[in-house]
Length: 330
Image (cartoon, rainbow, N blue to C red; front, top):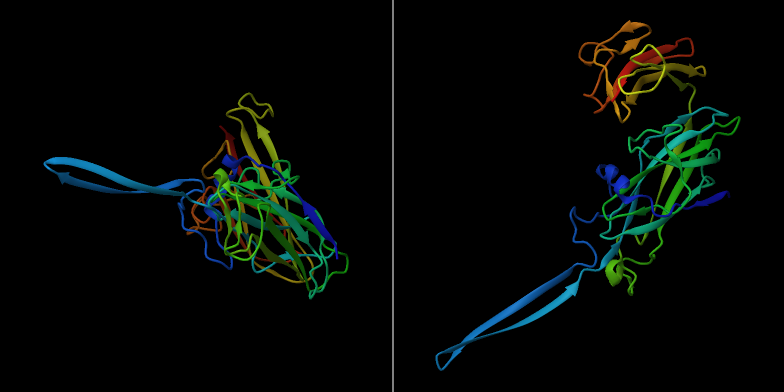
């Protein structure tokens, strides 16, 4: 069994909060949104007033306690029902989102097991990347290699891309299991870890027992869709400098490998941060198409907010589709 352990200490918590909308609790109840943070003191005061001989007096009794930290990581796989691959394919991408569903800061170890068993082949781990720009897509040269323990504020999430190579001659399915474990501690739900929580509080193990895992399924397809992406820059002076006001033209070339048919092929491309989409610039095989899905195969913003979406339908190895669109650098 091949087993990998990677760590990533203290990712910037503010950057991680950008993907908090992806929080989905798996196999356990999530803590309610806006749960009281660990370390907060909750006081309760009883007040008594009374009169003796015409003189009023007041006394009170106050008792307080600190909210303890709940340890509750969760993880979800984003590619269900399968990551479709071809034999000898490199860097097949499985996308996972890990979430701190507790109420205090926590660090996690990340372990990938590509030799789960009960399947037809073992994917070969290539690398794990962090979704640095929080757009949900793996961006070469932008997303960063995981190199430590991800640390997350309460309620925050981060997306990880697990890249695996597919063995030559692979058929059927292969499984990749990713497991995250709280560095604060694990145990049966309700287990108390004295003084291990935020603010000097005790930590209480939550419903996930401080550990969470999920499997990604790779499925060898008779037809595999491949996409290549290039870009060109035209600046306001007629040159190719990437400066404010420059126009960037992206070209996506979509092909199919294998003897089968790939059905319902849909291409989604998020408009990069610090750029603005140029309305009406989508083309398909050299012909303009609209930004409105009701008109044709093109779409901007309605199917996937902040992205273009192109519906290519069914494709075989005999077909190549070329998509272009333009953005302006802000």
